[in-house]
Length: 73
Image 1 (cartoon, rainbow, N blue to C red):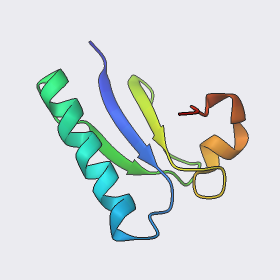
Image 2: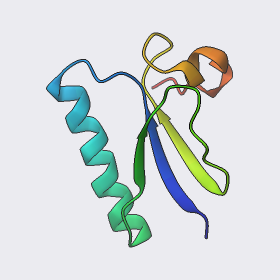
Image 3: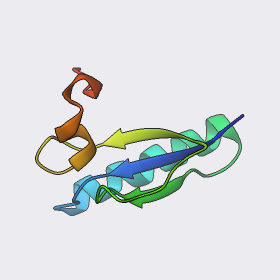
Image 4: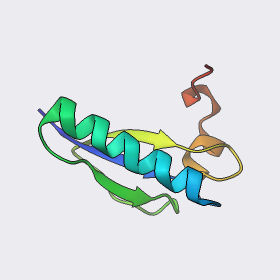
């Protein structure tokens, strides 16, 4: 199974930071290992990883470039 990366946008407050931490814990329980966490600046090299992109169009360059990747809840 490929390793997992959480690719987050700009974290503007403690609640957003906590969300990334909680997602890490949830994925850890599911996968049996912690995912790597990477701030998205558009230059990250994540070949070979399954990526979970977190943020908004304003905070995460990947989501801004790929609006179809957004999940509506």
